[in-house]
Amino acid sequence: MIGGIPIPGTRRRRTLPDAHHDILTLMGTIDPGLADWMHRHSRVPALLAATSEPAQGLP
Image (tube, rainbow, N blue to C red; front, side, top):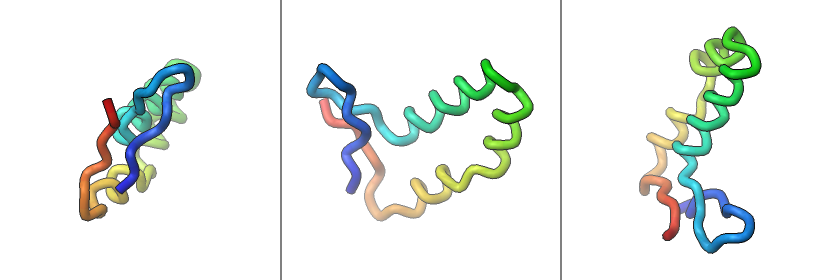
């Protein structure tokens, strides 16, 4: 299981689904067309769904 992405300066982690959502949101701010393309072509949601355990952030 992947425990998420560390948040510098804290003992917390971002979940992978949350980080993926944030990346798509940032892309949409920069280039809505790119965000749409990424949303349609990203394999990240399928890869996260295929893991045996859900990726969760640590408190």
